[in-house]
Image (cartoon, rainbow, N blue to C red):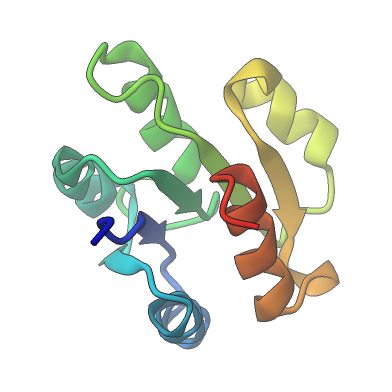
Length: 126
C-alpha cells in the first residue's frame, strides 16, 4: 500500500488551521500542524511532501521560516504554498523569491476544497 502524502500546515489562526487539518485528513493526508514558523521549523524534520504556510504569525513569520528552509540543503526542495490574507502577492513573491514557491493563495479567494485540490495537483494526485 502506498504511503499517505504528508502536509505541514503552518497557520496561527486556530479556526483556519482546524478546518485545513480536517479537510486534508479527510482527503487522505497525514497532517502535521504548527502554530507559527518556529514550530514549523521543528516539524519540518518530518520531511513533509508539501508545506502550506501562512505569512503573518507570532514568534516567526512565514517569510522567515521559508528563508530558513531554503537555506538548509535538507529542506530547500520541499514545495511550499503560501496561504495568506495579505493582498499583494507580487510583494510576497519578491520577499521570498518567486522561484521557491508553487503558489500564493489569498485566503479570502479560496474555499478549503479548492486549496486541497491545488495541493493534490501540485503533488500529482489528481
